[in-house]
Length: 250
Image (cartoon, rainbow, N blue to C red; front, side, top):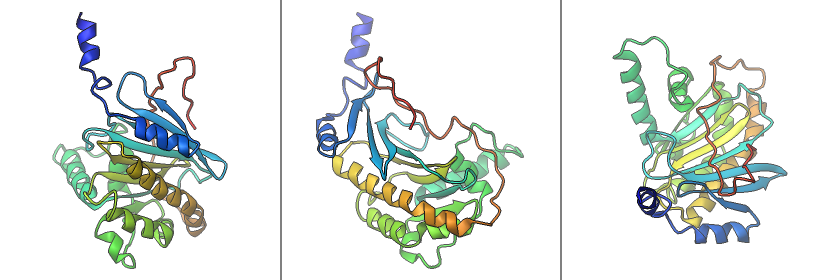
């Protein structure tokens, strides 16, 4: 009886109708799977022959409420090419939180359990946005090599982010776009999985991916800030319904 009640009131039972997302994925020839044990899904696709993954489910970050959209892709990037752009409101909030946690408590080091995006705000230099006035009103950025960060943002990615600020990011949800350990990641708050919002987020992500080669060329020869990374904080894969077909990291 108790288990029946748990299933009745579980997030999966109360979850969103995912038929529109499933139809959208099918029309684009993408693989769609529901997540096991929660209201969520996984979508797999490819860009220029390389696989990427979309996940939507319960948040993995304390600064995201409701549900979270996550995208990732394996790239041929230097492991120390670490760049981050996030919504300005979120950056300001995380900077305040980080300062309070690690100065008020008289801590001299940031623990490895702290998400990379918070540690990077302390460790890495800010990316100058003097030539990106429209962008800096909505976003902030840091990078282990600032020149690479500027090259990444300028041009197509800046245009895509400016368009997003007036579109699916117009309500200023928490939003993070980063490169880490040779991969690209996007993370944002998305309470309702609208296919239009997912498609728009994917378009920004793919633009960011295509711009990474330009950033890598710009940062070549410059020494990146040396900061240890951890393997478990950037991503946690949702599991599909089919236990016999486990989802493998891309």
